[in-house]
Structures are given as structure tokens and as C-alpha cells.
Length: 255
Image (tube, rainbow, N blue to C red; front, side, top):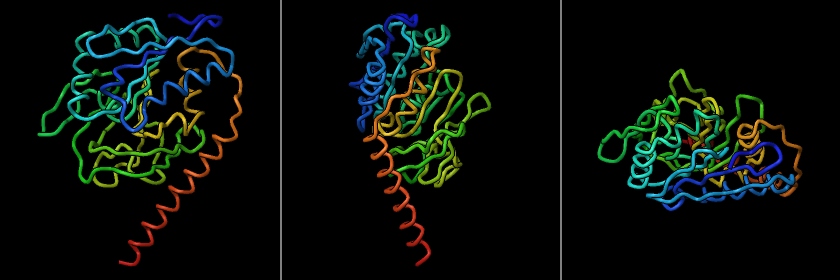
């Protein structure tokens, strides 16, 4: 399953029956379609609970899930060690929401129990209140277009010095560390590991992010791929998020 520039890109979808809330499974489809649109072959492998994780793919995708599913996925990945070995060999990983928490050093679930994570991100997650729910706009630190997405999480994730934020929040909560409004960070990057709290699915809303992941995974620069309807969707979501933010600010001003 190794890509050599003239073969197939291997993408592994990890535990979609456990970790695939809010349309996260669509991220895999976006990645595959954007490769196919450039004439690049792709081989996707879906790994279910109890099944071995291939270690020679270029990209691994992990979605979000509830506490029980999150703990089960984390324990399987930790016990096998396969994902960690793949990353050591140069693979890229993309994770959403609970998947972000699983990749961190540890995370707290209901009842106050702290579960060890995989340690692929220098991040820790603790329960937060209120729950972060709603549309998000975030500005990537590398100058890429605004990120749009939908968040729904009860965890606040603090990044350590080994990881850096993917973006800074314009509207919404994002990582949510340090209190109700969060610390202004969204997502995390560490080496070839990239994670976000945004659903949507986020790669359908932000195709530039899908291309960034594919370039991280393959080491190749991808040719542009035009999709005007995607830009229309992005503009609609951005307008919606901004209008919601303005409405909330107006409501606070009236109180």
C-alpha cells in the first residue's frame, strides 16, 4: 500500500462504526475523490473493532464519537501500537473531535475518569462546561482560507509545546481550553499529525485542507482542482457563521 508517485495512495479509515459522528465518514470520500480528480490511484481500507491496522499506508483517518466508543478505539490503538509505528515510518494522520482527544496524551470522559491517549499529539483534554455547540470560523495560522465547520464537544483541549494550533478562532469555541470561550485555538498540528474539532464533514467544507493532508501524506505537490460549487458552499457557511456571531453579540449588548 505504499505510494511511489506512480501507484496508489493508501488511506486507512479507522473504526468508522465507533468514530464517525456528524458525517465524519465523508472526509474519506473527499480525500479519495480529490485524488481521483487528479488521476491518482487510491486504495482505501476500513478497519473495524478487533481488526488489525495496516502499517504501510500513507494516511490514516479517525472521526469523532461518544465516550464509550472513544475509549474503545483508544484502547485498541494503544494496545496494537500500529498507528504509532506508521507515524514513525512517515505516515500522516487526520483526526476529528474525539479523534483529536485520542491522539493526545490523555483525555477525560464522563465520571471524571482520565484515559491515556496515544501520545501522537502533545495535548490533554478535560471536561468543560458548557458544551461547545455551533458553527465555527477559524483562521489558519499558515494564511490558508478560513476554516468553516460545526463543533459539538464537551472537552477542552490544551496544547503543550510539542503541538501548535491549526487555526485561531474567529467565531465559536474551538479547542475550548481555559473556560467557556476557550483560549482561541482550534485544532492541532504536530509533524504529520493534524487534528480539528470541526465536523461538517470538515474536508467537504474546506477542500484546501484535504489537499494539505494529501500533500503531507505523499510528499508531492498537487495540481489545482477547481470546484466552484464548493466555494459557493464555503461562502454560505461563512456568512451563516458570521451572522450568528453578530446576532449573539447584539443579544449580549441588549442585556
